[in-house]
Image 1: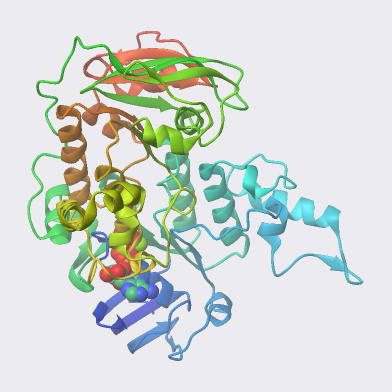
Image 2 (image 1 turned 45 degrees about the horizontal axis):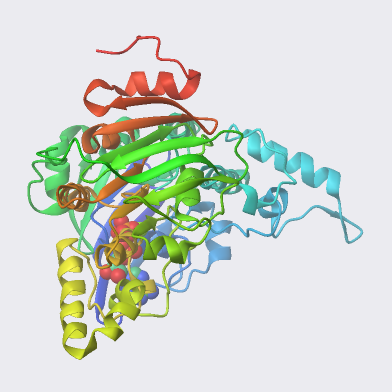
Length: 505
Ligand SMILES: Nc1ncnc2c1ncn2[C@@H]1O[C@H](COP(=O)(O)OP(=O)(O)OP(=O)(O)O)[C@@H](O)[C@H]1O
Ligand SMILES: [Mg+2]
């Protein structure tokens, strides 16, 4: 057997009282895709940050190509050893251009002056590696989440690393882009690169993975060739229990009531089209579309996070003031945005505070007793989401990515909103918690919420929602009952704007 590119043994990492990694061993070989699986908070990102030198390990051995790495590795040393990583939380600087981000640290300069032309061609070359045709001078702030993700990947691949680590790279990507990325990763493997791959999408692991190491609570529970696993056995290794029904039954949701959310002639900023949308109480409406179809923009316009150019939004017949999120919340609309850093978490505050922050005024005016009840309610919701944290009093910034997502969701669940707009609600959420989340969304619908879900993950839309609205370039090109849609029919609609009947079963 050849020397593994990376060998970890007896790895340990703690954060205060939390043991994030315990006695973890793992070999990563050249020319393999090695998947790292586990629930939210299992320790995957921590392991990655130890590998890239972003975190110092407490104990254990870390070898690269047989050479032992010092306890304090440091990012520069890891990079010099040929290790590149695409992190779960993107690290691009939004105010700089794509080119600047791609070449940071190594801007081509002649006599101390940045060589703009070389910068551009070099950046373009890096972008080409991920199939992005993009003006390198575009500021990163103007890019969609998916494009940013690809730029991030381009940056890492540009260094020609011999080990590439991906921490949930497809969460922001739509089906087609995710597929393209998986192909790219397979090509990397063929080139002899060692790939460590983290995803909560099991089918991706089965598609590209050679081997898998499963973490549970920081410990390796199983490791082996992926072909020795079935979906069920992999889930069982991750979750420690069986997850039977992923999607809730769409039972007894109301059909004939007037729409609770009524959107008319809404034109999001930057869009050439207006959108009408009705969602009844008890209904879950999915929004599908390719990247850039304007799905997030639609949700943000409804909520007022980006003031729309024109159009009206009503909740229960009452007009919601346009472009003012605070009024939207007061009118009963909540938006769970795709980017948890942005509309989001207050990193210094505790988990519990981050949940109750939206309902604070209400709690305060209701006095002490109800404050206690509110806090119980917060805990109840968090428990229900299986939030993994040492304590609900710890800063939210110390939670794993998927658990942070759950905190944002919990925030809306304790307020009095009746219309919930979800942008990629299960982004980064593990399979066990996904099932919980779907059940929860189903329950909310049965309780009379009107729910809109944007998801790039078509199986999720098909399994969860009642009706799917398809957007293409900002315009509604389809509105189909989920029961009559297939992945193919949605893709056809999303890409051509026509339902030509192919693929409809
Ligand atoms: N800076 C920190 N301070 C305290 N605890 C931390 C810190 N970073 C991570 N942890 C804890 O370590 C554990 C592992 O977290 P990690 O981010 O590695 O999980 P993960 O497997 O990547 O989860 P996810 O799938 O949600 O991304 C969690 O319990 C988390 O709360
Ligand atoms: Mg993580």
